[in-house]
Length: 124
Image (cartoon, rainbow, N blue to C red; front, side, top):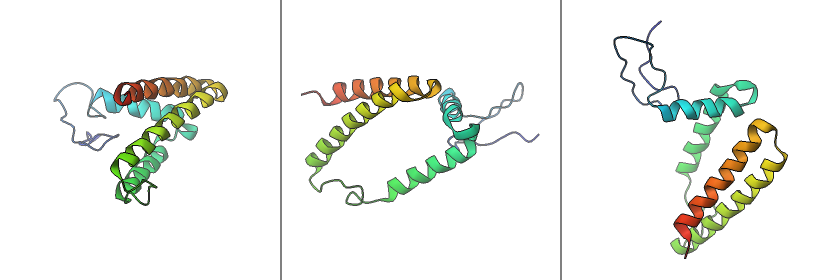
């Protein structure tokens, strides 16, 4: 078997040691992200999940602010984005109440963490 030279999650280069098991991910963060994605991916198909995620990220990065529905005024754009963040907190909370168990706790945790971040960064 040929050792991997790039991370299976992010594509970053991996330095393989001469001994021991060959690394698949560049860091514990990438390994955990891949495991989480695998847990929620349909039928455990991580490759299709990653492909869609990367495609969405690339598409969003290339869109101008107008296409994302952001106002031209930067302050209004921030206000609207923070409001949308709170809407996501509410949606994750509702999903936690109705989702199957492997996803419910993830939705609940996402809602809690997003709310903490929004409170910490955007409290007056």
